[in-house]
Picture (cartoon, rainbow, N blue to C red):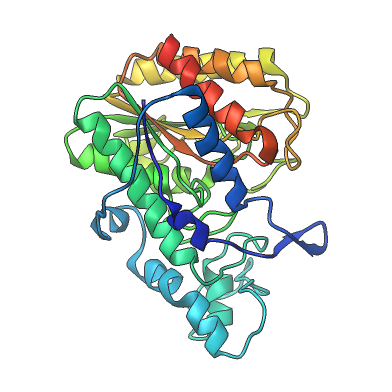
Length: 342
C-alpha cells in the first residue's frame, strides 16, 4: 500500500487548545503524523511518496469560496488587528441571531467556526492545503488501479463542513477525495467514518446527495463532540434521503459492540454498490484515548481492517483523529496491515 505524506503538515503547529476551561497544548499535534510515518516504515507497509499539487479546483467542489478566502487570510488578519495570541473565536451567530458574515476577523472567526477549541495559526492554511493534496494524490492511486492507498493527512478534515471549521479540521480531506473520485468517473462512492467523533462535516457536504453514501460509527452525540450532529434519525434529505447512516454508540463500547455496528455499516456499503470507498480513519476509538470513551484495543484495529477489505472495492484511507499519541502509529498501521493481509 502506497502512503502519501508531506512534511508541510509541520506548518500547523498550534500552541493552544481550549480544553476543560484552560488553554492547553493541543491534542492534535505534529507528533501524531511522525508516529504514524515511523510505523509505516517500520512494518514495511509500502512506498512513501509526496503529494502533487492539485490547485483549489477540487477543494472548491466541496467548500464555499468565501470560506476558503477566510481560511487563507485569517492568521494574517488576526495579527494585523493587533491580537497577540492564536486566533480563537469568542462569539457565534447563535439561535435567533442574524446569520450574516461580519467584516472583522473576530466576527468571521465566529461565523465560520463550529467550535472554539481549534485555534488558527500562521501555517494552518498551507498545512491544510497540503493535506488536501495528500488525500487527492492517494485517491489518484486508486484511479491508476491500486487496490488501496493511504493519505497520511494532517491536519485532519472530517469536521470541516462546506463553510465551517473546527474539531482540529479546516478542509475536509475525505470529502474532497470522494468528490474527486466521482468527478473522475466513479459512479458511486461510499465514505466510511470510523473516528470516535461524528464526521459532521462530511455529512453536511453530502447530506442531499444520492451518489455518495456516508456511514459513521461514533460516540453518542448526546454525550460526545460534536454534540449537535450524528443522531440515528439523520438519514439524508431530498435525493439524499436514505444515503446517510449514523450508528451512534454508548459510553464504554468495546470491540464486540463496535464490530457489530461496523458489520451493519459495511452491509450498507455493499448494498449501495460503491465503486470506491473512502475511509475516514480515526483511531480515537482506542481505550486509552484521552478525549474519547470507547474501549478498543490495538489488536482490534487489525481485525476491523480485515473486515473493511471484505467490501472488495478500491479503498482510500485518510487519517483523521487519534490522540493517544504514543500508540497512534501502531493503531493506524494495524488497520492498514489488517486490510492488506485479508
